[in-house]
Amino acid sequence: MNEQKRATPSHPIHTLLAERWSPYSYADRPVSDDDLQSLFEAARWTASSYNEQPWSYIVATKAQPEAFAKLLACLVEPNRAWAAAAPVLAIGCMSLTFARNGQPNAAAPHDLGGAGASLTLEATARGLSVHQMIGILPDVARSQYGIPEGVQAMTALAIGYAADPISEALRERDSAPRSRKSLTEFVFGGVWGTTSEIVG
Amino acid sequence: MNEQKRATPSHPIHTLLAERWSPYSYADRPVSDDDLQSLFEAARWTASSYNEQPWSYIVATKAQPEAFAKLLACLVEPNRAWAAAAPVLAIGCMSLTFARNGQPNAAAPHDLGGAGASLTLEATARGLSVHQMIGILPDVARSQYGIPEGVQAMTALAIGYAADPISEALRERDSAPRSRKSLTEFVFGGVWGTTSEIVG
Image (cartoon, rainbow over all chains, first blue to last red; front, top):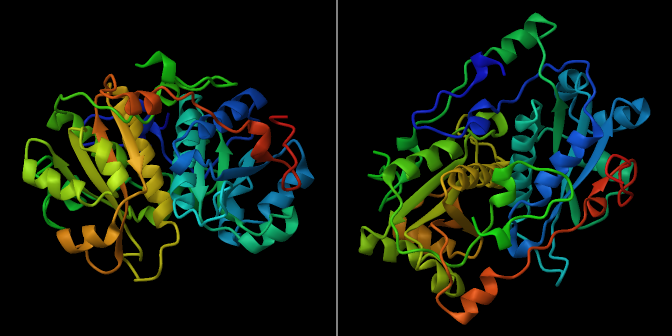
């Protein structure tokens, strides 16, 4: 754990939540299949609307350089620059319609976000870090992997062991102080914008 | 913990993730402000695109019956029926545009989903349960609370202590076996629909 990056909560939260952060620098150290299986298993048990489980993942590790390069090409260039160092990359996709009736599933991105959070906390529990990115090229992913209509690539995930930054630019990013809005700014009571007395 | 509802993972996952489930039945027992503060604090430290933190929550407890009734009225009727028993209700909202430049934030529902997952795991760690719902009436919420343009109510959360069901209908829902797709159905390798050898 990078103590500098630990959350500084105003109210106690579970260690896993406090220790989670999104590094830009990764060690040149593979992640075991056992660990990866548990990460996707964590995503699997996430709550979803009508238990639709709208998430799917495409995953590649550096053990297969061609597969890894193919996945890296689905990221926007600024993300490619640092994510290339991660030993594992994944793309998070969502089904836009319910399997049972073909109707739009408005909860799909929400539930993919929940799955990503579960996966990330399992990673934290295993000494791993995950950096999720919205900056991807969904059309590249669609054509490269044959993602069907009705499914959308939405995020990428860099997975690995956080490491000391290898450049000044990365050091700056990885040592930036963490900042969050105060609870009083986003937990409201009877009127929008008025802090709930529970947190006020 | 309801042992019947514990996840049955195929690969080991953290206890908090395995114990989380979404009850329909709640004990008539208040949740302390300390606990609620920590739940929203957990949401606060979630990862978000550009650290936008697009989530906001409106919260009401049964200690204030009028405020609670007002929030309950934002749920679709089938959810109102069971969620009325929860001691705490919240509505999860998202900012649709970035505060810094007014551009659309495509990650907003994804990041609200991550925040909901963090909040839920903090609840699990405290012996509490959370049942998230997409079945709400966003327009009712907007007019009742004065939610501004550019912000959208998306989910509701029932928060409390899971209890023995008080009706046969609730017992049926709360004792339904948990089911999930297999990892082989949603973790892919080089081609969409082809299981990754990492989990295959």
